[in-house]
Length: 176
Ligand code: IMP
Ligand code: MG
Image 1: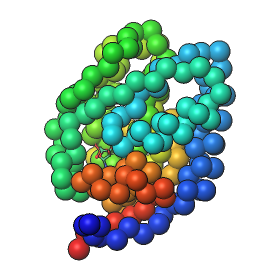
Image 2: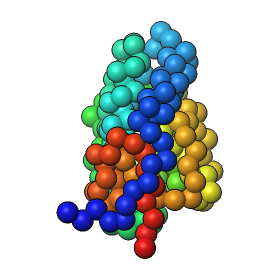
Image 3: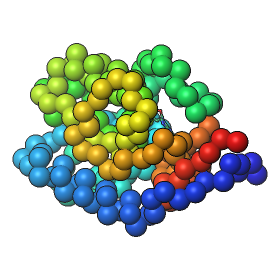
Image 4: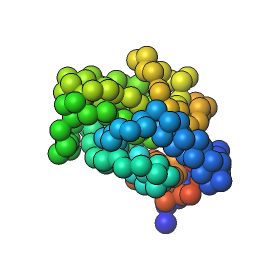
């Protein structure tokens, strides 16, 4: 099996669990009495979403959206489009985007604009990780898990060319 390069642990399973609990507590506090629509960005957010909604002990609705692929390399193409859309109506809903990582900021700022046009009652962003050193488009993250260094990260649902999603920890990989 091709498992090169070798991932190095950045955040352990336990650290991730504590962080997801903290994020859930912040979200619970802010959405009391509401029925938010959580929109996960495929595929990288699916593990995070699964853990998050099981800690949020109030009713939420879950949707996923898929944006144009990141490609095979470690660089975003920068051209973003929706390749798998939403079934739920966004108009009038309290929408919370659930992301795996904000890197250049291009994908999520595209998504924020796309959703804003659909007139949600409110629109916020929750991201498990943030790589601010690479930002090209300013993005305000309302609920942030970890700030990560300028390295490619994998694990806990996050891939490099479809590899390493299964890792329970968040790891870094370096290209040779
Ligand atoms: P952005 O448009 O550059 O902010 O990033 C768009 C998407 O690229 C993120 O939501 C991730 O799915 C993916 N991505 C960015 N950086 C990484 C990384 O370090 N590891 C894995 N995926 C990444
Ligand atoms: Mg993503």
